[in-house]
Image 1 (spheres, rainbow, N blue to C red):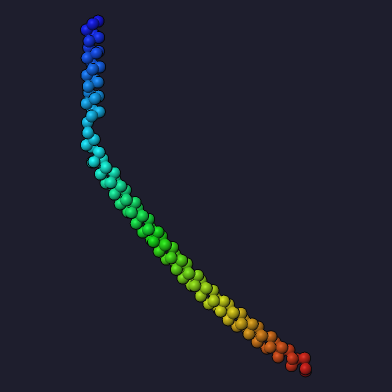
Image 2 (spheres, helix red, strand yellow; image 1 turned 120 degrees about the vertical axis):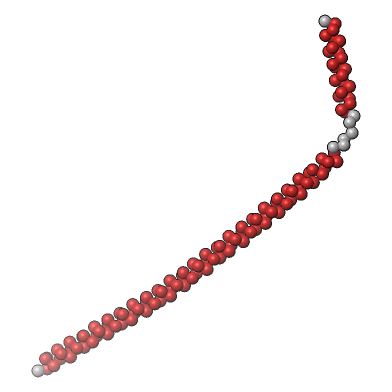
Length: 119
């Protein structure tokens, strides 16, 4: 039992010396640790700038696509208006022609009926 107590005491004393040795070690890794955040920050800034550039490019591309669609839609509307005007003009012309024929038939029938009444 005495042997166990000696081993435990020796282990505790060795641990105490090891702890004291590590506690007195100078903070040498502090300088490289400061440069790591700078590198990380630079990488972060670069990634953010790249993301902003991609976003701006996507926005410009979307705006251009929208403008193209608007132009296409306006062209289609203009084309539809032109076709509507042409269709209306044809309809008016056809109606006028039909009315003229009807008026001629009425005049002809009236002329034929008039001499028969006078006889």
